[in-house]
Amino acid sequence: LEQMMLAVRLNSWSSSPSSPSSTACSQNRMSMFIWLSMVNHSCSPSAIMVLEEQESERTSPRCVVRALNDLQVGDEVTLSYLTDVMISAEERADSLMKGWFFSDVTTLPHDEFIGAYVQEGISQDALAKITETNALAMKAWELAHSSEDSAAAKRHLKNAVAAYQLLLRSAQGLLHPQHGWVLNAQRRMATALLKDATEAEQQFPNGARVAMQLFAAVVAAEEKCYALGRLKLIDTHRMAAEAAEAAGDAKSAIMWWEKVAEGEGISNPKT
Image (cartoon, rainbow, N blue to C red; front, top):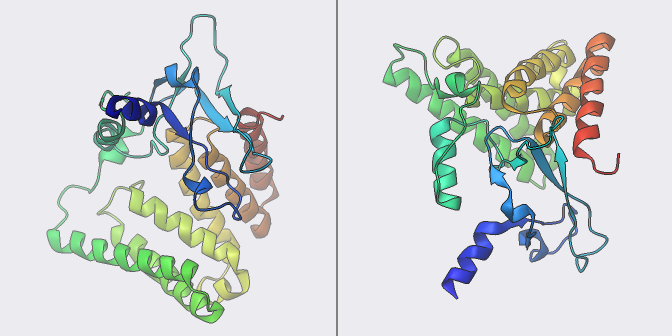
């Protein structure tokens, strides 16, 4: 029985519905697809797995595998078992070992800058200050998105933006420019600036343009990590396009919307 349960766990994929009205049980749903279970992992996959929306919670999920680029006869179809490859090779190996009992990873172009946690010569005091600032920012962000009081949510969001701004200033010359904390701060600050432009203008004049610049930095890093068609990259391209539109930069908006369309053409099995 233990061997059977282990086989199921190692060969199953999450098929939880994305609908906010889904039940707690269905939100943890796993499904096994016989042919999909035979596909090997790659940190630089040649395909992605897309689950079509289910008509109801009782409907069996349907899985579609889409190639991320042109494949020739004999090319191996691979998928990433990891939801996020924008982590160091060591972290990817650790995640694979914990989840699937193997640790072979593919070297990726971004491994060098992802692995560069800090710049040389950083003091422990400076690193501790950055760590504390990041923790405060994350806590404020969490409170902003969990508070049922709109006024409190706005206050927490403002505190989060201020903390992330401090983090970006403190990290200059200390953390790698494309370090995960830096990219997360840029993404969240830009998201907040777009969410409430009127409120943001009080903290950041020309908030839309600042948001566009922040998203541009995140896009530059993520394009090194994700193939076109990965949902996370599509989402970032979409937010960058919206920021460019808000900033009145039509050229950049068109460029990013074209990337959104190209990515969705790969990932969406209905197109």
